[in-house]
Image 1 (cartoon, rainbow, N blue to C red):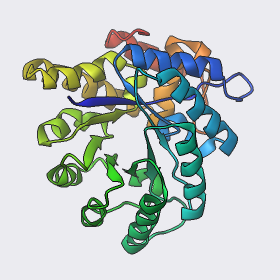
Image 2 (cartoon, rainbow, N blue to C red):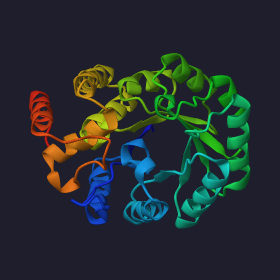
Image 3 (cartoon, rainbow, N blue to C red):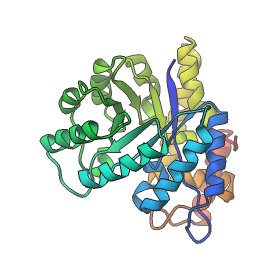
Image 4 (cartoon, rainbow, N blue to C red):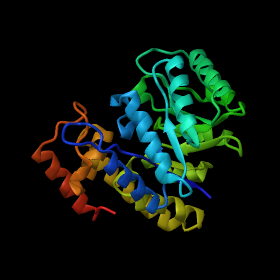
Length: 292
């Protein structure tokens, strides 16, 4: 069966400290919709989180998911040294696997990325997923580098958020029982499934957890027409939402418009305003989206 992971948002209080109780509710909400959890990812504001906050978010994700869902935690940091330390701590907490976003700020060669992931895979006690989102890190990993890494027994797969169809298809061509591909671009979920992916890691699942899960479930049940219809609806909504600004911040703000208890983003990723909230609210109404 294919799998759906929600790239979980982080809830905040009015002073931008983390609202851990509400974040628990978000985890429970995703699990009730049949989704697994990826925490401390792009949609979870990982780049603005302190190390202690990341660890606590991973702890509550593991606590809530126990026996009901799986948890992958993003441990990626700018250096291999930092990533090793953090991934080791996540492993000791009890995650099912770690995702490792390509290093950011530091410019990397493909050889550097290869050595980075090999060292991690050799050293960490839980499976490692490569996490590629070059629009944010400026360090995109190439399919030929991934292919070399895929033979390592502790590299479990890749979360591909490159947005490039040719990369997704290349990764799916490598997929087998030991190397899983998860589509991280919501517009390509169904395309990835048709190409051989194991499922998706979705930011929009924070807004429409049922839609995203339904694409995957209908594909597995061979209800192709239904899966196509939901994917098209998701694509149309995504296109309109992302015209308003920075995607991950708009995902979080959309949940806020439906349920203000999740809090705003941490500044300066999004400056809230009545006009923006009205635009988001109108879009949610247009697509008949409510908090589920």
